[in-house]
Image (cartoon, rainbow, N blue to C red; front, side):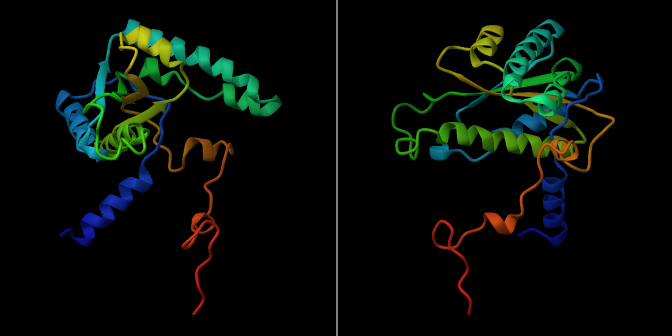
Length: 217
């Protein structure tokens, strides 16, 4: 059983977690890094397939190449936006890949566990969904350790595979910049920038079927 204090702490961490883009260069203790990886490794996975692996990147030359791949893709994606929206998109920071002392590439192996994994046979995407659960665990652990974490999602998988020597069948699912920061915002960065607002939870809840409303007694 968990105490009320334990429950309050959990919800506080969930609500405080942010996607961060600016970092200090201060090194992260190895013990703390292992805490993050242990948290990720204890994430739930369909069929207990544990499809994740973690590539720890600290070399400046490799981080520079990853930043190049992210910036190239960011500029390519900018054409989908117009006028102020495009300027706003191009203003999104990706320097964290170079600033942060550590970048972790989280990969997903769709072959781990063989051809018959409980649950994955029906829904193949469960390997990536399981890896996402591991990432969320790491993110919450980083928050409680006083660290900032930013998920970089602008890149071509082929570029990251080439830079990090990842086999063709392995999915490079996330580039995570991790480090300390002087600015841990109280709101999501994109919400503060008026890119999007948090949707009302009540509008996202249905009952029994899609669009179904609660029965009135």
